[in-house]
Structures are given as structure tokens and as C-alpha cells.
Length: 479
Image (cartoon, rainbow, N blue to C red; front, top):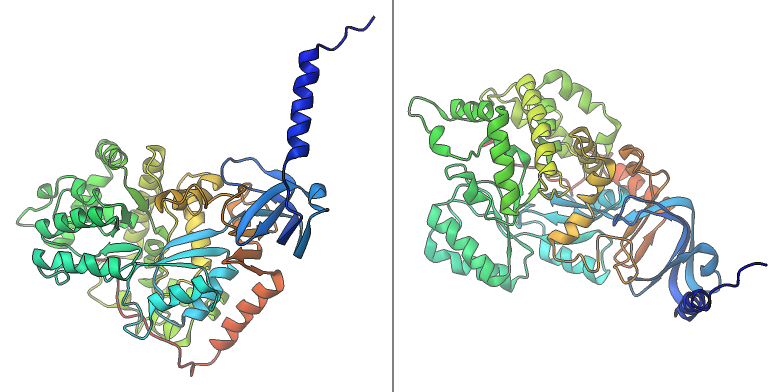
């Protein structure tokens, strides 16, 4: 005779069934995205055959595709078995030419958040605060737009007395970051950090090359892995009177090649709690810009069709590219050797637990959006898994911004900000390029919308007479 089922088991099963049936699902929503495989980025597994219900810019339900059938929707999107993941963030950009073109390129490449790192980008012709407001209200199509203040250096603020006014301006304008660019007097640097903490402002930027590295690690985020080629744990070891700045730089690079020194450095960075935005792609591009052969090959790259004529004219010509000037001291071979060192350092910092942010600098001949995928590839080349690299542009960004409870993942209650990919990027990071749908700022962009955006940028930039072109005038990487 078969043993009877214990009454406790029946009660437990009944409770689970009641919980499932009692779950409150919406009767109607604005959007249903169904038949998708979800990469939540909370974990590395893929959740197959799912559907998202979206209302007022939020994910109100995640359920099996079949269970979404009874829910009415103003717009129903068939994911076609594609892969749905959070939108990517580029946490270091410079919008210096036609913003609408740049925004189209970001969106078409799955970039739904960008952080502009200089309030004066565009030399007065671009109102970045107005751009931020226009995107937030839906007046302008674009990724979520974060804005830093003016780059702070020896001239701004000019004195410790001016620090308070500069920081108050950041608060009054609602700026998202305080950006430190040049070397500051130690007391001014300390006053900026203290004043920013009092006001709840994030301080990001370049390292202070004349101070011990630990001082720069007091910022919230360090921009550019390249800064470790200039900054050192003890700068006095480099300040030898008979060495010129280039010799001191190379001495620091040599020190960085020492495994024991790197071990101390990576441990120091990890213990500081700082976030790091490597922007490896801009340093890799240096090796192209300094080489006649590489520059000639780059000019033939079909992706250059997305850049304005004047940008191509400046950056793809040996006569006008600023890194082709005779006084630029580094060769392509030396840059490549240094890049290999930076990749190794990236891996070690990541393994020590230093949180990495995804960013590019969107500088020179880099195509907005497209360059972010090149940065992802470099992170994987450095030794990160595709999942770890993608988290740098999703989960880690939300943690850095203090938004991890409602953004950066695909979860119920979270912001509806995601992309559809034709192939699984966890298998191959190159699959992150296969963007065929974008949802951000309450808008859905289909495959045809993406094709139209790309085509319009190519068409607008086909003519050398485009009045919206603006040449880039500064070199932010080498000091």
C-alpha cells in the first residue's frame, strides 16, 4: 500500500499555489515586451522565455511569456527570442559636436546613459544643462545625460577662497560631478574634497601627479587607467633633479612594471574604495594617431562615416592630427608596450575588488557608442569575463550613482532601461554589438528606428559643408 502524503506537505504546496495565484498582475500596461531571454546582470544566468510589463517607465512585472498573454498593452513588442539586458553607460564622454548626432549614435549602440565630463565642451555653443533637461522631459531623444562642472585646475579655483563659490555653483546648477583635471595646490585640493563631501557632490578626475597617489584616491572616481603612468605612491622617488619630466614619466612606468610595486599599488587602490574608469580605448587610439600607416588605415574604416567632416579632417590627417606633431614624445611601439602594462594592471585591480566603470572619453576619431564596445573588448582582453565587463557599464554604474535599488538590473520595480541583442554577450562580448532594440527614457526604438538613426547621421556627415561640425581643440590624455 502506498504511503499517504504527510498533511504538512499538502499544506506547504497549497500555500505556494495560493501565493502564485494571489500575485497581483496588472490588467493593462503601456508596454509588454515578450519572448525574450533576460540577462538581469544580477547574476550570470539567462532567464529564458520571459516577458516584461512596463508602466510609467518602470518594470511592473517579469513573468513567463505565456502568463503575459492576458495583460492588455498599448504596445506589444515581440522580442523574437532575443537577449534583453540593461542599457549600457558611458561614464566619460565629451559632447563637443552636434549633440543630436552624438545621441543617435549612443542610442543605436545600446548606450542609454552618458556622463559628459566638461561643462564647457563645445566652447560655449552647447548648453549641456538644457540638453539634460530636454532629454529628461522627452523633448529631445537621447540617453540619460549626466553633466560635470567646469574642469578644475590651477586657474579654477584660483585660490582656496574661491573654492566655496565654485562648489556652490555646482549645487545651484544641479551638476552631477565635480571634475578635477589639472594639478591643484594641496590645500585647494583638500578644500574641494571637504566641501564636496559637505554638499553631497561626487568628485572625479585625474590624479594629482605631484602628490602621493593616496591623496588622489580620496576622490570618488579616478578617470583613466593611464593616470597610473604618471602618479606614483611616492612622487619624491621620481623628483630627481637631473631628470626632465619625460624621464621621470618613464621612470615611473618602469617602476610600474615591478610586480612587487604593483602589488602594493593595487592593494592601496582597493583599500581606498575608489571607483576607476579605465578608458583604455583612448590610450589604445594613441598608437594609431602617432603612426602614419595606422592613421591612413583608420581613415579607411567605414565607421569614420559617422563622424563630422571637420572632425575627420582634423584627426585623420597626418598634417593636422595633434599627436603627429614633432614634439609629441612617444612612439607607437612605446604606447603599445604601455597599453599592455595597463591591461595587466586593470586585471590586477579588478581581482583586488576595485570597482570598474565603463567609459571611453569619446575623443578624437572615436565614434560615440561604437567606441564603448571597443572598451568592452579591451576589458575582456585584460582578463575580465564578458559578464564582469558588462557589469562595469550596468550594475557598477548604478552602485556608483547610489541608484542600485532601482537601476542597473532587470528587476521588477526597476527603471525600464534596456536593450535587445540578437546574440548572447555572455558567450562572446562581440555579441553586445548586435543591438536591435532600445528602451530608455520611456521610449522604444525598434530595429528600423536604429537603422534610420544611423543612416541619418551618415547622411548628415556626408557633406563637408555641415555647419553643425565643430573641431575638437584639446588633448586631454597626455600631460
